[in-house]
Amino acid sequence: MLKIETFLNLETLEQHIGKDALIEFLFTHLDRFRDTKSAISKAIDYAFSKDPGRGGYLIVAFEDKLPVGAVVMNNTGMEEFIPEYYLIYIAVDASQRGKGIGGKLLQQAFDTADGDIALHVEYDNPAKRLYERMGFSTKYAEMRWQRSK
Image (tube, rainbow, N blue to C red; front, side, top):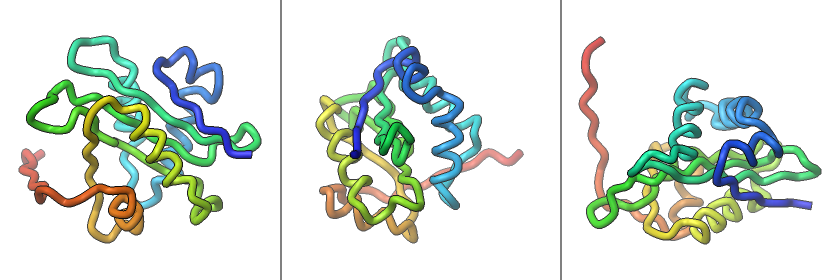
């Protein structure tokens, strides 16, 4: 039976799955759209930060106590001119895709957020169709300038 939990602090996350296990889950199931484990860790730390203008939450879907999906939401602290929340990561176990878990995770994210939500998605990511079905729309093209290393 699918059980979806929302985590507002690291202590509760550690009791259910553990930060390192969640990082490994996300790293594995984000597939070719993944970031480094360090970046995933920083997004989780940001979500649980008590610093002004930071915060957020994590959502994890469990099937028989094993993680099958996860979301990392960060609070932008910038309401009124950009959405209050940024969906940093959403991943579903590759063997569980197509069962509606991604939609249930997004709905839980909507129900938990007390403001608007933004995300970025690559044009060729199959999840883009799910986001559009769930009500996300393209408002702007994101452009980035990267400092030479």
